[in-house]
Image 1 (spheres, rainbow, N blue to C red):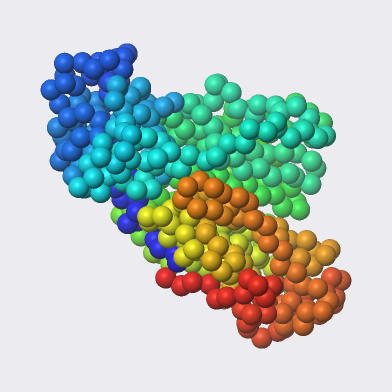
Image 2 (cartoon, rainbow, N blue to C red; image 1 turned 45 degrees about the horizontal axis):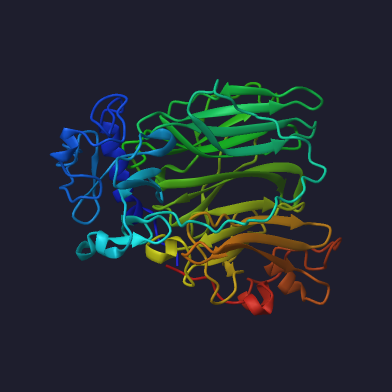
Length: 483
C-alpha cells in the first residue's frame, strides 16, 4: 500500500530544520569547539542524549545540553548529529544511522527497561540504542566468506576526490554516449547544516578521466541524480533540488543538457509540472528519473521521458519532450508509489517497475502489505493499470528497495529485480522475468508491453486494456494495491 511521504518525514524534517538553526561550530559533546566525549559541567546540568525535552522551533536546544537538539519524537528526545558529518557521542550514548536524518546519537541500552518504554521507546536489538521502533536502520548480516573474484573488470578508478566541494559523494547517475564517452553526474554532500552540490565526471573514449567538475544550480540541496544519453549523443540529466528549510523548500526537478559529453551544460531549468509541487508544499517531489528512446510509431524520432514522484500529483508522474528537452508535454500518471525504475524498448514503449509501499512502522524495513508493481505505456501518453510482480505474502521494504527494470528486445522479455526481506535485516535480491513466450496470446504479450506476435513480429500493440491475470506469470498474478 502506497502512502505519501509527508506524514512520516515531517519529524525528521523538523530535526533538519532545527539543526540548520543551530551553530555547527559548537561541539555537541562539550559545548565548545573541539570537544571530547567527556561529560562537561554544562552537560551534567542539562538533559542528556535520550532524555525527554520540549520541542520548540524557536529554541531548538530546549532543555538539552549545549549543542544538542530536541527531536520532535514522543516526549521529545535530546540528540545531535554524529559520524562523518557530526561530532562524537558522549559517554552513555551511541551513534545510530537513522531512516532519513543521517547518523544521530541515541541513548545506549541493554534492554527495553533502559529506555523510556512508557512513551514507546525500545532498545533496538541490533544497535543497542533507545529509539522508536524502526527508527534506526537495521543492522544487516555480514557474510564471512571471501569476496568473489573480480572477473575481467579493471581496477577501480576514483571519479571524485577531496577537491570536490562537500565531504562525501553519492547517488551517481551515468550514461554512455554512442561515441563511447562515459558521463557521470553525482551529489556531493556534507553536514546537515551544509549545502550539497552536483558534480560531473567524464571518461572520454580512449582518454583520461576528467573529474571534480561542478554543475552549478540556484538550489541549496541536491539529490537523486539520473542521466541518459540519446542517439544524437546529447546527455540529459535530472535531479531533485530544493532550498532545505526542513521541508524541501522550493523543490524542483532540475534538468540540464550537454551536447559535448558533459564538458558544458545548459542552464538548469525546472521540468516538473507546476501543479505537481504548488508553492509552499512540503515534500512535494522525489526520485526523478530520465530515459531516452524512440517515439512509438515514429522510430526515426526520439523522446526524452522524465519521471518523478509527486505527492500532490498522486504518485509517479511522467513528462515527455520530443524536441530534445526544449519543451515538455503535460504530465501523466504512471502509477502510485515513489521509488521506481524506467526502461524504453526499441518500439518506444515505456516500462516502469515501482514500489507500492508504506514507509511507516515495520513497512519501512519489510512488510507483506508492500508490493513491487509493473506498468507500461505503449503510446508514450497513457499507462495501463499496474500489475503486481512480487509474490503474494512476500515481505517488501520501503527504504532501499530500489526496483530495477531492463528490457530484452531480442528475447521479448522484461526483467525486474528488487530487494525483499524482513525488519530484522535479512534481505535478498529477488529477480523476476516477465516473459512473452510464443505460447502466450497476443493480448497477454501486449499487456506485458511486448510485441503481440513475439520477437521480430510486425504487428503493433492493438490489444484491448490488459487484464492482470494475463500480464504476469500465474504464480505472481494479483492486482496492485491501491491507497
